[in-house]
Length: 183
Image (cartoon, rainbow, N blue to C red; front, side, top):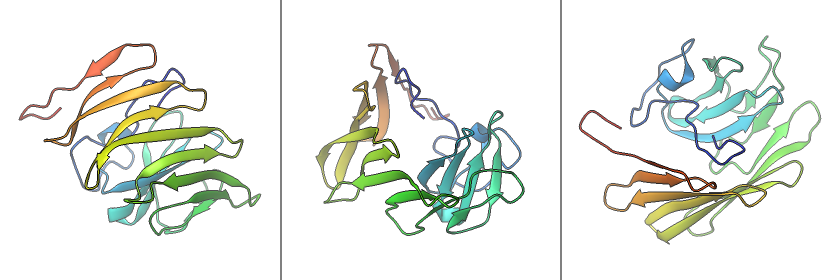
């Protein structure tokens, strides 16, 4: 997640770990298997397309716990009272629709050559862009540009394919160090 000041925060998943666990626990302690899409409802809940586990996982607000929603196409109410949304299960996802109103909530654009996420546009026309560097198959996200131009720079080591630095719009930065124990 990128907050309004352009800082990146992990909201779900254990970095570098693949699997299926964590329901009912803090979302940052959960294992995901191939997260490939996101949706956000009006209450601030985040839905993650956990592709390899064939699930839609929910990071609920105000406490970030994952809950299972076992549907390929629909994140429906299931008694939780959340806004029902639908999206294509095929890749790449191009839009998320509010099933109650039929309104397009988010539209996703991808690069033409290797289908990497290029931008997300919300229902109000606010666009967040992802800029890429390099050539297929050696492409790396270079920056994320928020709707009002705030740019978060990303530095990826092309040999290890690991994120090594994030520089925020205010100029502050965070360097990552990888060891045998992890990040």
